[in-house]
Amino acid sequence: MREKVEEALAKIRPALQADGGDLELIDVSDDGTVKIKLTGACGSCPMSQMTLKMGIEQRLREEVPEVAMVEAV
Image (cartoon, rainbow, N blue to C red):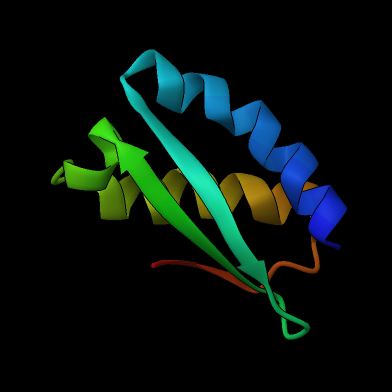
């Protein structure tokens, strides 16, 4: 599952990088929890939680149905 998540994140990453941010995949657990670290402009952005839940998590769940949730670390 980690490979599928990495492939999906590779599609999301350019949009984040266009705004000066990025993300780092920390862990993919067996229960479907994906842990990521938002970096760059995304790390300090007040909208980062919305980006995480409404953008990244939603897109990951579409592409990798095994993903249950995404957490920021």
